[in-house]
Length: 350
Length: 201
Image (cartoon, rainbow over all chains, first blue to last red; front, side, top):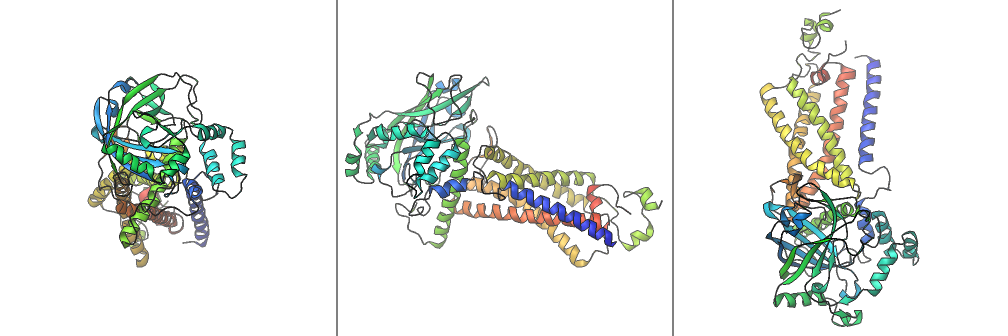
């Protein structure tokens, strides 16, 4: 082999390797720090005391529930999803507080959540994480990251800067101040917030959002009255309600009118949009957050049955990516804890 | 023009070259070459999609995951076919003058590549199963879980999937370097046995 071949060949090989490695690094987002990576959300969510061992990275405190979703068939008008056909399907759910702190006090946490995982005929699943706020605080995942970073910042002006850059945050501030408090997870309405695309049997697409309307009547309480009941009152209250009978919510799909905002969950749709009552969620039993069946469920809102899909709202994808990192990290902690047998599986050790 | 250049790679070569064992005489069968290059495209795409889909919270991540799952299963099917073909058709012998250590490295790295090609899709499938997530191929069609829902299994498989992915990428870099070394420096027909054409004189 000639020396010239070695030099030229070596140069070509070096160049090919350099291009492959650079392309791989670019694809992985390692060439710059400005990619909207899910890890940045997790870092921004970290509470001052750190994440609980094996806990979810947000909505850390919660309680498991089980029950059913009974579809009455009306939603087949907008979606051919199998679990909208008349029938009763098993459901695993979880009520939670919208805080990364696993020891958050009920009365100190404004946002409450309800996640569900319904298994339809043939094993198709529909997972969703819903909150009692009627709209999202900000319009984009980038703005939400800024909001999380500002919330954890020592700079007292940080939130004000985000609010100035994202005026939609004002509506959330207004809701947080004026919306009534209740002393029960069962009395809350939970909203899917994001718009999804439902496809009917004829192939027509409909932008929908959904809400879960409680059968229980909301009894307004003051935050002080809730505080007086103790930091974990909501769990006990739910337990006692379930002991005396099942709890129900109506699932209602709301269809967007032409021109309605489908990409921005901070903009609620005007009242009067057509709705479809998809069916009823019935909860029959509650379980501990650690020992219950919801512990290992990632309520990833992009796990959708055929007939429901993500649309132009960027949040479901962002939530899916961030939930996946949360799930990977907490299950890794859980597994290493099991391996060493070294951790307490108490209330907050999830 | 020598016999070698006139008859090309598939034809007769000069007896002296053959005797010295400097060039590979037989190419891979056409079906093996098609499988190799199709899988090369799929696997490289898979690695880039994999690191890309977990790097971002933007909507493209969902589309990348939607491609990642069925593409992984396709690679699993292709590698099974490929090993079956290899068992029937064999592989061309390496040049006789290739040092024994290099031959061993070539053999070992190829079996490591096969091990990664087989294990990665199965680990991925198992990891999704252990996470309790539906193993969706495309709208409405999903594969059954191959493992029970388990945090411990998920944690182990998730680590394995990531680590083997980086090792596989490193192996591919080694493979590409070696292939180009054969093509550009040794010019011994090893590259052409898979790429087609004839080695430069």
